[in-house]
Length: 426
Image (tube, rainbow, N blue to C red):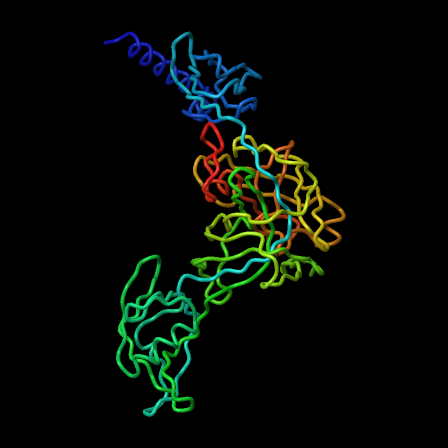
């Protein structure tokens, strides 16, 4: 048996003894020590530790580790690279934590109000209606088993791109049964459908209410100045009727002007009222609509905000409870800064929404909006000079508070790899 194995056995035995003699809190803190940590160069991260442990650092050029108090270890990223912290009990190594130091990553914070125009992949089924045919009224689509929320992508092998394309295809097939390809729960299937000829206008129809686009407003969160990729909203855009996420074929974002605000109250979310022209100047494309927001590439310059240039981002592990600020527009196109409080932050190892809870504390914003309102989604949250996330949802029964998403997950959804040593255009 090797010396290393013997040391681990002794260390494990000592930990078991700690529990038996009544120091279970120390054991719990030992169990919470992570096996891996990521930190940006020059930044710090605190690791909860057992006060009976001491630590040693391998490759001290990458990491500096020092005890800040008897229950946590403060790790500083000295230079980009990998390192390791070894925790010892009575001089015996019992646990290791790998430390990865990343190069600082910077983006331009947003705050600008944007108009959003989405075009769906195929057409979205949002309801049924009866067709008056020679033998009575029927809805061919409902009879065929097509459900509300399904996406029609093809008819008889011909791609469906919009609502008009369905009508064009149906008039060519006349009364024949057709094969309709639908997408349901991200899976494709074929259903047979026999169109009905409307006795009033003599055209063939399928008895479905359908939609091929959606529009709204939101807030830009960030722009990567290297790749020109952006992220906005911080949450998925769903269809108003079916409540299902919209599968995007393509889309566009436009400049938007806030005209007024419907103030939020307990039980009733407020709303930004805005104007944008879908035939106006395009400022970016939309390539995806995900639980973390909409993403694409910026094609035009932005209005200025309160920051000259870019800001570093913060990982979820760096975010702390306490004061912060958001950037958003409440009048016209002017981006303004407002104070908020980070009430809660979850240090997430994997992508997840609602990692933050924030509370609006700025008296002027509270007076104007009542707190978080619709259209504010995507407003960047900044703490200690770093972009930490975006506002996403309001608490209906408390409009002064709501959820936020950590910025690292939005960047990941945008196709930006913050874990690379260098930013690359793409």
